[in-house]
Image 1 (cartoon, rainbow, N blue to C red):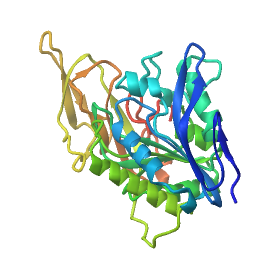
Image 2 (spheres, one colour):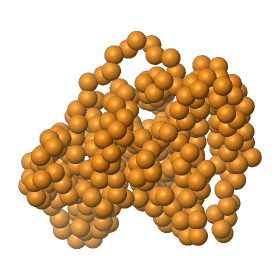
Image 3 (cartoon, one colour):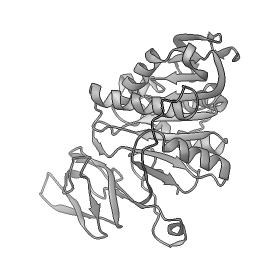
Image 4 (tube, rainbow, N blue to C red):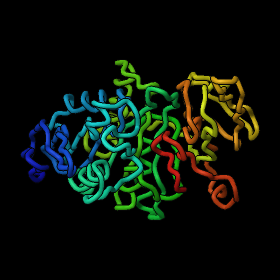
Length: 352
């Protein structure tokens, strides 16, 4: 039998499921964090799944809520903790990556600071109460309301061969073809911070433009079930692993001017294509006088996400480019400048 599962005021005995909220004290305010605790009838790993880290990313929240309803504790080996809205202020009061409370992107400050500002305290609360006790951590995201995105899974290399192997296998279990490796576990992303704690952690990006359609949500739930079967949390169904392609980031593209953004790459996530260094990615037009600022690709590779919004300011992330992974890439100079200098994807980070 598994042990009793207890988080804050919520608890679940072995073989039961509990749903409710736990209050997090953020110093100047409190927030209620919704949780579903699925305490399996059989022993196994503890898996933590979060969504709603950012506002405007609806499909991950929908998928997490669907999964919480579908999981039956009698079928579960281990424990599954599902947090569909990890950042309520950003989700319910905002539509961007930054919290309206303090203007901070929580996925740049993990593992947080219990004595910091509200968002830093929330990150610390999530780590202390959810992530730190996990064997496996899955953080669900999608392209926000202003972002087109190719589906991918991301994870960070830690240098621990056993941990990296387990995480690579987890990343390949979702049925998503593209897997992007971060070459270090540095940075303030939740999955990077979890990896530094020795937790097998992945970022899963599925969907774009803040989609909330049922088909995308079901595809996400199917991927989560595949991963849970891979982990032994659910019984296997005999399906074979899907083939994957491995990538590393080659460059991020940020706006250098304020204006109206007119990209010249496709907004169809299925056909966002290859670019060569120097290719024109788009133009920023000054609405006052019509002056153009041409944006060029700083490196070869494939665009994995790009800005769909019309209005941009300096530092806004316009696109992120990755190249197929080859272990000797890491030894070549000037090839792995990480995206994330602006406010874009969560695998990206200003620290390489």
